[in-house]
Image (cartoon, rainbow, N blue to C red; front, side, top):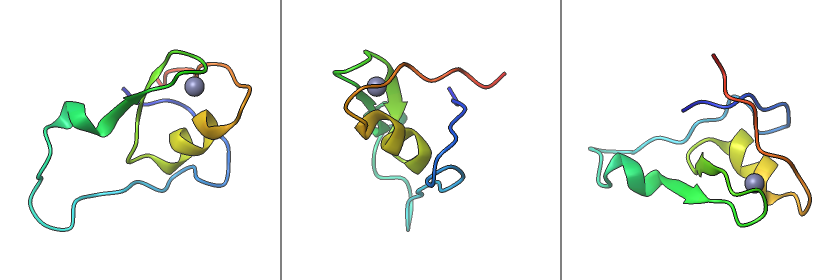
Length: 61
Ligand SMILES: [Zn+2]
């Protein structure tokens, strides 16, 4: 799922240098602050969830 972010990391997406080495599900982390699962390859999402106080991101439709 994609989420709308608006910070300095928005638009930066990590990718594998060679063939995919992890299953898709292993790229996601559970945020202990807001409880939302997020894609660790998406810098905008990572920076959003790194803030000490935040709300879950809105899904992009
Ligand atoms: Zn969060």
